[in-house]
Image 1 (cartoon, rainbow, N blue to C red):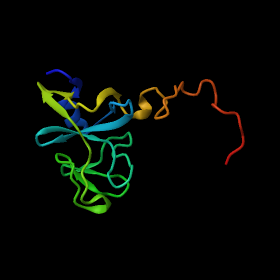
Image 2 (image 1 turned 60 degrees about the vertical axis):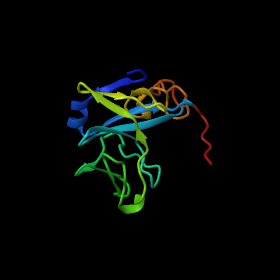
Image 3 (image 1 turned 60 degrees about the horizontal axis):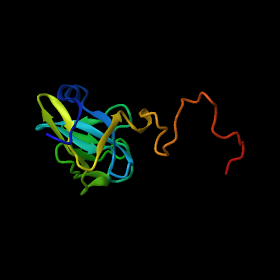
Image 4 (image 1 turned 45 degrees about the vertical axis):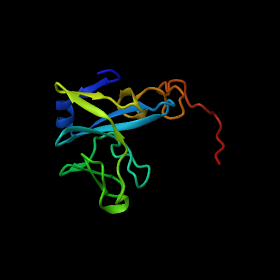
Length: 150
């Protein structure tokens, strides 16, 4: 199958209950995504509650209960397989999907909109986050020496 990237194993997702990774859209914009176990194998979702721009996985794994993803901020619950929410602040919404497939126990990104950037969240990629500047871990000190704040 052309246009796919191996992400992880089905066993890893099932054991850890989620897997966080970063993708880029066709314009180069980075988005966090998650894999979660589902009765049909694995589903992929953009790592964002639909009620507010709240991350579902804040770096410690996705909170789940009975095959539902729980928003850590408001408690809205999304079906892990369909992405649909029928309760809380996000009721009536659906998570943004990321196309994945499973073959021989391996999970592949097959989405035509997103391409794989790296495992982990935005801050784990070494590009300093969303502004695209390099993060050298602070070895050169602060980027500004000004003591003025607004």
